[in-house]
Length: 117
Image 1 (cartoon, rainbow, N blue to C red):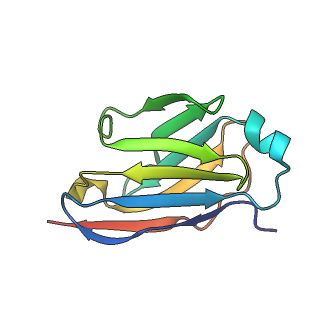
Image 2 (cartoon, rainbow, N blue to C red; image 1 turned 120 degrees about the horizontal axis):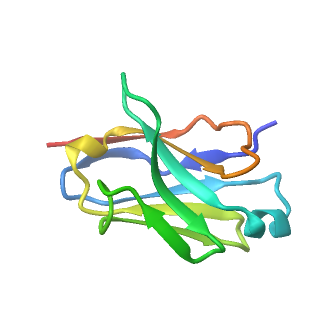
Image 3 (cartoon, rainbow, N blue to C red; image 1 turned 60 degrees about the horizontal axis):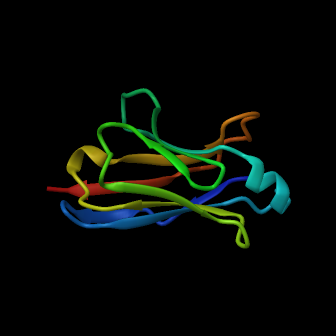
């Protein structure tokens, strides 16, 4: 049963923007709101990397490589977590996934982001 549905990826030129979405159709709103949400990415041949964290709906933390360019947020009414990605670089190319901190949900299929130079 799908619990995380990522979307919004695509092919973009360097310097462009994308907004990723992570829908959580099976969570009730209170569970969604109480969770710490994270976006991860995994490039071919590399380990999964934590990109952004959202705690309490407004406290954010980012990997150094994306700080100042990415913004994590949520919409409680839609039970959706977002990742706004600006000033994209070729090194941002990866499959992107979301999940909550604990306990983790079954991983979704992710959404592919490809940044061309």
